[in-house]
Amino acid sequence: MTTVLVLNGPNLGRLGSREPDVYGSADLAALRTTLEAAAPSGTTIDLRQTDDEGELIGWLHGAVDAGTPVILNPAAFTHYSYGLRDAAALVTKAGLLLVEVHLSNPHAREEFRHTSVISAVATGVIAGFGFDSYRLALDLIVRRTTI
Ligand code: DQA
Image (cartoon, rainbow, N blue to C red; front, side, top):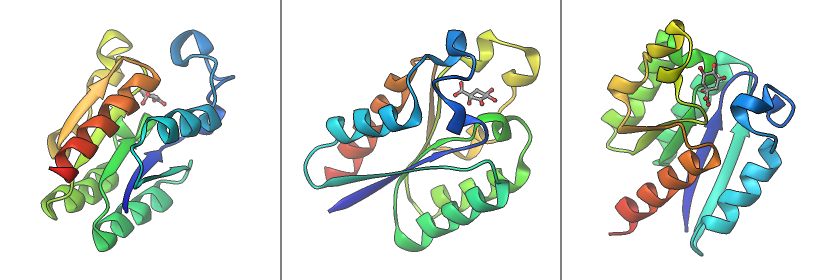
């Protein structure tokens, strides 16, 4: 049994009602359902969301300790949280996959979103495809952890 941690940062709990023109009108529960349907049998989706930087960092520490691959949407923390970056680096330095995902394409948006302090320590980045960003990340993790 493989578990994939799907971690979501600040304001993503408001998905569905938050700027639907940018993020779509489906909520986090719908994302969980989508990923559970896409996951092969034997793969468990552990989807979480927090507005708290320390809690998100703690979850990454837990991924290191448990050896769990991570899909991470750091939301606004993407652009400035060195604490989160250092925790993400612990995951990839431990040899675990960490895929940074974004619903929108931050490079097509405001200037401050063009910088990610996470990307350089992530295994890779998928952005701009809505829920499919997460699905592609899941496919990738499943492929790389089962071969
Ligand atoms: C986001 C993009 C970030 O710039 C923003 O702060 C978010 C969501 C995305 O999924 O497109 O909260 O990470």
